[in-house]
Length: 258
Image (cartoon, rainbow, N blue to C red; front, side, top):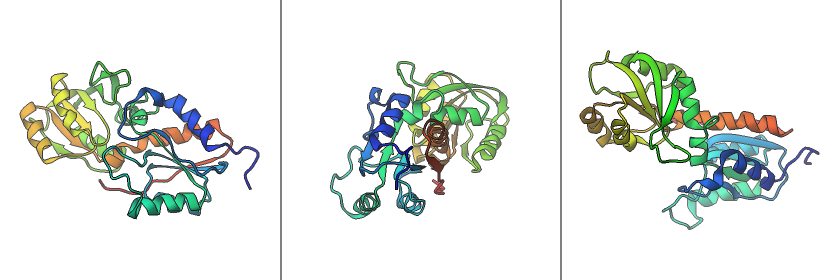
């Protein structure tokens, strides 16, 4: 039975919407309450992606809500509720679990967002937006104490417990100070990093073309993992939710090497 402290899915969503300025983003998916199970919430499971393994863990933990960075209903995907998507949604509804997701709002938040979390982990100071016209930048420019590309790769490895794929654009011991970053699948922003005069760019993924772009643009590139670079924001949101609501909130990390 729900406790006296239980909250509704809409109340949880309203709090997160306000915190993350969700209404101010044009995104690739709906932000906020994606699946409303209509059950009062007294336990929340958080994670990077609403995969089946995270749903299974929420069922095991008897949670009534999942809050993630990567939810469902992405732009351009088949709208049919079949196969894997149907299995996931069926499991959520059958077990009374609502799904709440925030994509770009959780990347961009200046205090708890993915980019800010990654910058803090690497001792980088955010000085501006990678795209200066954006009201809520989804990529940032940072400054660092002088550091070599080899040293930065090692720092990323220690911070994320994952060795980045490093494309060196010059001497391995050259000094890096102006470093752009955007977590997740933002590898093509390397061109903007070059335009903004950055020495290096850190993101999550890498494409075949990224190697050539890094070398020809003269920008060291560090592919540090989509999942690994996007744990920080949801972990910080977990802390905020635990402080805000008198209910259980637990982050669950489903390992993903990509």
